Image (tube, rainbow, N blue to C red; front, side, top):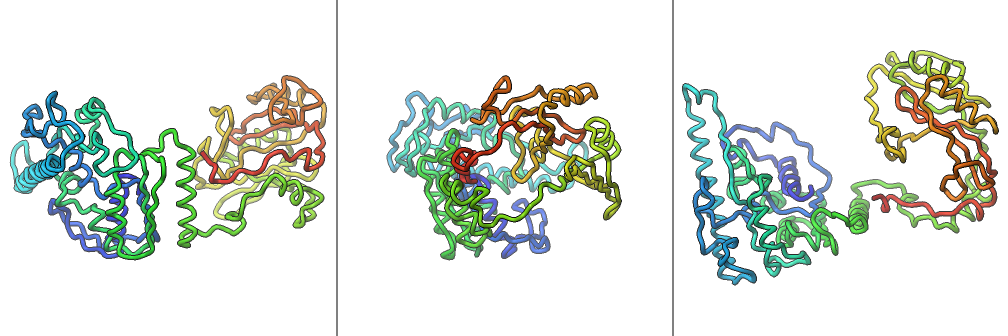
Length: 473
């Protein structure tokens, strides 16, 4: 669980391991024992606070005296007043301020409990059937630790009073719009069950606690409190240097944190990664000396590509496209399991383009399961088949491209791929491939290509070392 999800994850795990709850804080029946929640194998509490109710109480503006009129304020606690208290704050002021925040939370809770009691009574007229009541909570961002970073100290930058004032009145403020039942479950500091400090002692699984050193919202006391509440030794406290709450503009920091989490998951045997995937990454020298055609010790006698299989949503439309537009003859079509079909088309030199049709296949997601026409880089997800490239006779690419266009296929211009990884506007001695690209009826991404460059030695052709998943942005 990240941020507010940390305490929710701890709450879920405690009830999955040792269910005790039979009703909500409002008294509504709910039997979590009967729910048979599935326990998680581990917990990740990432940049998390110990509970929404606790941190919300630390953010409440205690100067508010009247919940229906936030302009009625206690001047002794009004940090936004022109002549109000200023940082650094004295221990006595901090103690009184925190006590007033807690008192305000409890006043709202008492009011909400009275409203629930009234709602549970039978009503006639316009109130019949009414089960809940909505209300507004004004001024919910007045945490003095945002202004005085000596309080619950970490590496964060202090907020300005103007910035905090805007958040305090923002329509999107925390718990700004609530209802009486959800208040008792989520925001009441005394009644909310989603409290990591109360829940974690009832968990037994490995737990990783992350504190971001420059976090301006979830402070060290929350992370350290949760770590201390874990009753066993299969726990890890990790402080991410320079990390802010949201990692905005910090891809390198995020990568470091993700790597630390992955290492912990492996160490705790919560994920299984083949040894080859966690061995040191391959160097450029490794590639050139041990992975080329003449030096690969594990090389098998493979005779080329037999067939590539894609999935069709409409096999009739696919046949018309592959045969009628691409000119690939249909050579095999047969039924398979559960009403599915399998079709093969001759792509030349013993290679085939094949399709499955499934009666209940999930829909495609361009940009995830396949390349998207809207993405100029034509990216797709890890593990997906990005595109299929068909080799055409040298000198015929332009004619074939025109044939596709004449047959109504939306096809790119001829693109010349330079040896350097860039592009050329014409065929030159440094061009490796000339290609044109187009999409099939289900979004499958195809390429017709001429290869103009014969691969040389590994020293000439292998120019970069492989990236790892730790470098994903």
